[in-house]
Length: 215
Image 1 (cartoon, rainbow, N blue to C red):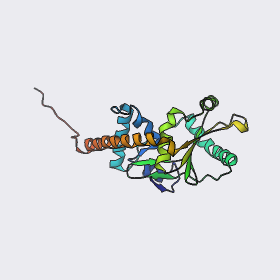
Image 2 (tube, helix red, strand yellow):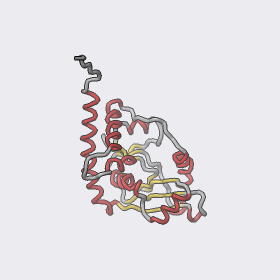
Image 3 (cartoon, one colour):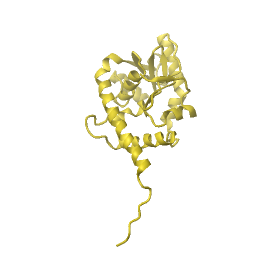
Image 4 (cartoon, rainbow, N blue to C red):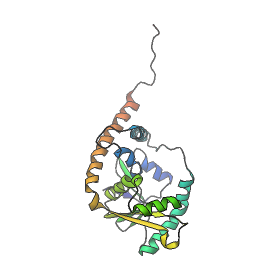
């Protein structure tokens, strides 16, 4: 279980806390090819995390798109709908972290967490039809429920275009049901930590200039 920090998401303080850490949103890259060598996305991620561990700053390019903007705008609406349907109060998610890992739940319900995705209509229909956590978010959700020490996590899909009683799709993931995946994840994280350490060594100890004499 990671330590909780009461910080507002997307602030400078939050960004600094993420520096040099493997966050749950990137766990899918790390868990890809489980049991085999890391792929290129994980290797690129390791380089970014290594740099963050050296500089104390999280790399970022300020990238955004319409889906991300919609998510930021509609997340409060989704949270209110979730509170109304479940008769609960959702507290700020903050940031859970240790020296290497971190995660930012979209909200906390007592000891438990929620992960909100504000989506377009076709995606919401896909989630309703699938009746499960979409594969793209599987490892993010497993990380969040394990690392926060929660008993469960609610994956929440929200689409404002739907009738009010269909705007939310909620799938509850119980920590007790992902013990095998949690063990796989713990093993893979240690392998990834070693990769990051190797990248730190490359950055800090490799020569920056090499001059070859022309024969």
